[in-house]
Each structure stands twice: as C-alpha cells, then as structure tokens.
Length: 436
Image 1 (tube, rainbow, N blue to C red):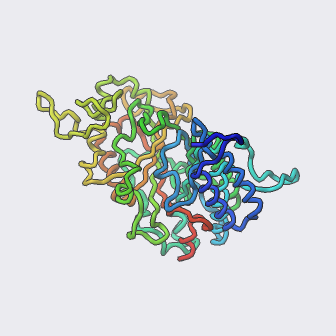
Image 2 (image 1 turned 120 degrees about the horizontal axis):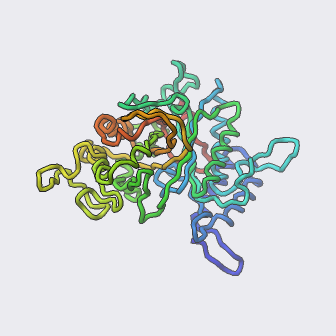
Image 3 (image 1 turned 60 degrees about the vertical axis):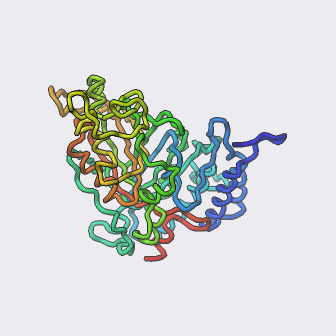
C-alpha cells in the first residue's frame, strides 16, 4: 500500500520494480532513454495503491506474462488481429513497438512519448490522460496464422509452431461466426476501468496500422472482484469455484505453464482459449429455480454443491437421495466439468460476462418464436499447459452432454499461444524470431 508522508504519496516497491523493468524494455526497444525515463519515473510517483487500488501498477516484466495468474480485474477488452504484411521484419518491428507501448501503458503512461505536433496525428488518442493505471495488464498470444496461413509459411516460423497449437475441432452445437473467430495475433487488456482496457487495445491497433488489422474484439465485465468472492455470471451462478489456486505454484506448473515439452520460446508461457458464448437469458429466466440448480449441480445463492451448504465443499459425485437418485444429475455442468470426470484435467478459468445490447433471433426451442433477445452471455477465457489435454478434452464432453447446452451457443473465439514473460531489454516473441 502507498504511505503518506509530508510530501504526499510515495510509490510502492512493487510499482518501482515495475517501472524500472518498463524503463529497460523501452530502452531495449530502441526508444529515447531520457524521454522514457522521465515518463516512467513519473509513473512511479503516481503508481502506488490508493484505497480502491485504482492506481496500483501490475508488473510488466517477469517469468510469465501478466493477466494469466494475476488476480482478476473487473473489466476486459480483448481483440484478435490479422497480419496483412508479407514482411517478417514488419512483424518484428510491430512486436518491438507493442512491447514498448504495453510497458508504458501498464505504468500509467501514454502509449508513446512524443512532443505534440499539431500537423501530425497525436502519439496517443488521449482518453486515458489523467486516469490511473487501474491494474492494467496486457496479455499477448500468437495464433496458428502467424506460422502458416493458406498453406504458406509467411514468415519462416512454421518449424517453430508448437504441437499444442492445434486447430480447435468443431464441437457439437458450435455456431461460430467467421468474423468473430480466429486471428493471427491476440491481445487481452484487463483493468479495473473499462476505459483503460479499451484505450490500451485501441493504441496497439493504431500502432499496427499497415501491418495488422483488427479481426474481432470483445468487451467483458465481472462483479464481486476480490480474494474472498467468486464472481457470478449472467445466469446468476458463481463462476470459477473449482479453479486451481493461482497461489499454488505447483498447480500452476502442472496445469498452466508450458514446460520442457514445448519449444524454448513457449517455456513459461501458456495457451489461451477464448470463446464468445451467447446465453439465451430470456429462456433461462423462465426456468424454475430447482431446474436451474439441477442444470448447474450447485445451489444458486450459496454456490455449494447440491445437498451441501458451503461453496468450497468438495463435490460428492456419488451422493444419492433417499430414493437412490444421484444428487448431482448425470448431465449437470459441474459433474461433467469435474476433475474426477476428466482424468484429472484442469484449466485456469478467467471468464467475463458480456452485454452487447440486443439482436433479432429465432428461438431454438418451442414455440420457436422470432423476436429480439439480449446479445449477452459469457466471454470464456481459460489458460492451460496444453489445450489438447485441457479445454479440448473437457469441452468435448460438455458439448455433448451438458444440460446447459439448451441455453448457450458458442459464436466465436480462438486458440492462441501466449509466450513466456518478457525480461528487461527484450521484446514480445523475441526468442521465437531468434530461433527461426
């Protein structure tokens, strides 16, 4: 926490470490050290925590990228981009610029530092000027299209494509929209202020002009952020109760971080699956509470497994009622997603709700009415060491048997390889391009 003295707020040690690392990155990217130093030292003096945590700076450098095991922020803005250049050097240059901009914005500074020139576009769009960093993290990923697209090895990287970076299979019930699916690069901004998150992705997209263009984007939000609370989704149920603990290094090593099985550039990284899941909220809201709880396998208000009282009590998948029926139904969501039902497989969920207004639709259930429904649901985000033994294994079963399927439709998303953390003086993906 920040401390008060006669001179006002003092920066936290964590903030100073982050700023120092960011300075090294900006210098390593070939930008002016004096200008960078001035800006980032300013960030140190505004980057301590206030009572609401809005000014807290999350470290940019480290063994892993931020935004994976970082405690969840309340808002996200994620985007996937398609590369439009044919030149490898353009991609490297973009990743250098992105690294510098991300380090600066994570420290509460504009994306670029430049003297104002009224004859030229501003170096930053400006909507975040005067706002705190709000725990901003930026997490980057590489899609399959960076390595091969339309059968072509565009940038000489095909030999470095990880075996785990597979094409996601078509799952039962998928209604993926092409313009909401895939992408060569991904970036997810998370912050406690939606304007900070959007600003960060907006700057990165602006800096990519002529090299990459946005393919799709998605906002998200959660409530109840905090170590003692599990956020609720738009169906009213707690989401993430069974997550492996981000405070357990052994669990993170086992299920989240890529080890020696991956290429060198992916070690300490992770694979992210993004899925935009529309929820038929109108249909759901007409269901009896008992049916909703049977569908999830948990009590709605406490979050406890059916038949129990406390949210974090372990699932008893063998429990039966007085008539010999399973307390948690065979097709309940928690049963199918449970570790015990998937040979020990686990993923780290970081889901956000979304609300994109309303749209016209035809219902998939009787009486098949046409009309306007909420375009709202879940922006599902999960990290894992290997998607083949993580999301693909777990969701393959869920897509076939989950009672929730009558209320949810997957409409977009993608799979991306998120490299390991960025060391001072390095740029995003440097080890990938050095070994190719």
